[in-house]
Length: 160
Image 1 (tube, helix red, strand yellow):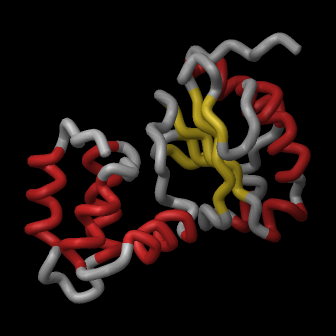
Image 2: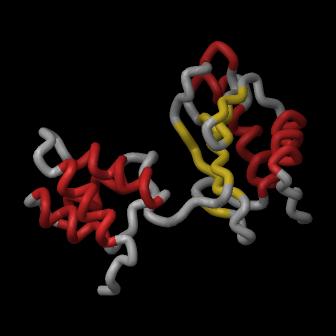
């Protein structure tokens, strides 16, 4: 197993969170905040420190959609898939997002510009469909509005 170049930082995060009741989730959030994802090389150290199996740690990482196992693109575009947004057209918006950003849900565009993700409620149900780009929420998003957002990010639509 290759050594993590960020091992000292990971060790500090583990020490900081190890004694916290229910430490796994806060520690995973801290690791993702620090590295932008949860490197697979971190799983054994986290499991050992918290007296868990690697499978338990991996199961939590893969269960929660918030956690990433690989680095995200320079911009993260999240399209809400919850019922309210679906009722207001998020499925069509998702298809448009895949076309506009040039990658499928759960994928990162080949040039690393965008990671496209599904989320299951952004709290804008009365203003559906909703999208979050990086840390900014967008309400009542149409295909045209999404294309303008892509343009503002400097992301060119991938030719079909």
